[in-house]
Length: 311
Image 1 (cartoon, rainbow, N blue to C red):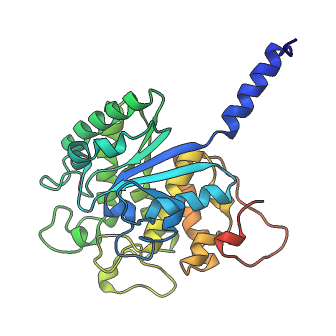
Image 2 (tube, rainbow, N blue to C red; image 1 turned 135 degrees about the vertical axis):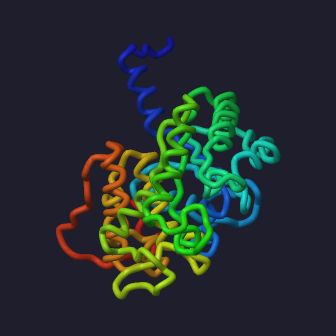
């Protein structure tokens, strides 16, 4: 005689199956995703799957570390190419991207929206729609997140550039406006990762220097790498925090001052705390997360990530 399963029990079984299911996430991008110019590039590369077999860790590996510390089950993949926008991936990488249906995809274009027409979002909008349509064919329920990148110091503080002489925050806002247009044009886009605006908040909070060309102010960090174009480990770390909060709905501060990846990259607890705060404030301003900081009953020291994961 077959065992009888009530409707309620069946629903409960389905619920547990859904809760315990691993979430697959793919990062599509360029050097701004793979961490060029910083120690983040090859950080924890064995924790993620690089579909191009280049041994990259980068922002995807930081995101993976955050999810593990939060007790979440994510399989993280990446497909990146230096200097590329989404048109490159559409023309050359669909066979790689199409190897499986993805639950979530994080992607972005060129840092100026269009490498040939800085500030013009038309190409980004067009390619976002095309890539999102392709991703929906793999999984009709895919959630796409667009990453709006940061203000480039080299395009603000040097002469004869598109954003020369403007406030450092302006390029990030212009880039965000372009990504908002792209998101509005593609129904599968769930949200935009406001990374550039989080950078601006880190500057406003006093943890990040605003102009690397005149030196880094004492007690502050540079979010830019040596070329004042790409990010430093601090900048990529802040990017990963914003992505983590947007995709999971969790307050980045819930990772705590002793977050292990920051520790492994040489950051102080104060720096980790302030970067988490900047990410939180940006996410909260868009109603993406609710305040839930980690409050420890007593002070403890940070540990390496392998020693910090939940049992």
